[in-house]
Amino acid sequence: MRSPLRGRGRGEGSAMRGGGRGPRGRGPGGRVPGGRGPRSEPGGMKGGNKVIVTPHRHEGVFTGKGKDEVILTKNLVPGESVYNEKRISVQNEDGTKVEYRVWNPFCSKLAAAIFGGLDDIWIKPGAKVLYLGAASGTSVSHVSDIVGPEGCVYAVEFSPRSGRDLVNMAKKRRNVVPIIEDARHPAKYRMLVSMVDVIFADVAQPYQANCIDGTMPAETVFSNEVKKLQADELKPAEQITLEPYERDHACVVGGYRVPRKQKTATAS
Image: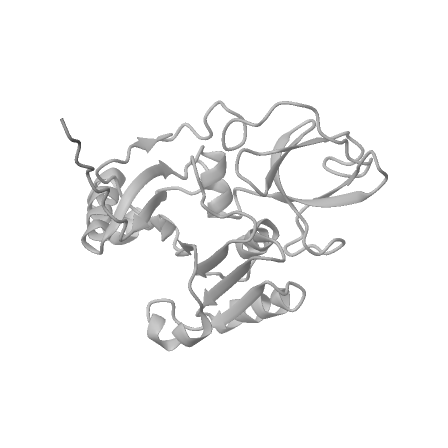
């Protein structure tokens, strides 16, 4: 099972990229396929500006190019905002309209990772995702957009206050299953979760590396934390910093209990 995990570390086979430089020079989160997409109606992003929407290299994510360049998800519930985010309405050539939601990297660590150039988020249409640390559902709502009606997001949040917002959001998004429970104790909610394709852990803590050990450099803390993940049979594949969107945070992507490739015997 592939599992993009919020983590802290610089493990074997993973290279810290980005430093404090912010997004890499490939556009929001990397290269965007060529071609011109449909234009948005006036009144979208930056009120009145035309916006060209094209598919992002991550399936289910889109790029909006206007005065600014942003990443978008197709709104599963047209006409509804979750956290007062901007929405862009696009009219296709056949006259149908599609609504997109702007995904703010300062409000979502997953969006920050995409802007930082993460190679693969592993979340795609039809996927089943276990989201640990869902908070009020800001990022969960965009994951809900990505996986679509055929996918499912199991959103675990411990705080009753944030949980209320999460439950209210889930009432309009039938592919979100809110679970008000401590994510650290999966035995308490395992009966509510089926087999999933992706696990995303999002721990809400400012200056997360300093929270673990304020006396060591952040990169040393990251390295030590990835070693802990490796000890738990998670094989790191990729790691990036979330700066400048989240200070002293990193995103680690890895596979859990990845089967070893068997060597095939060759006859001579």
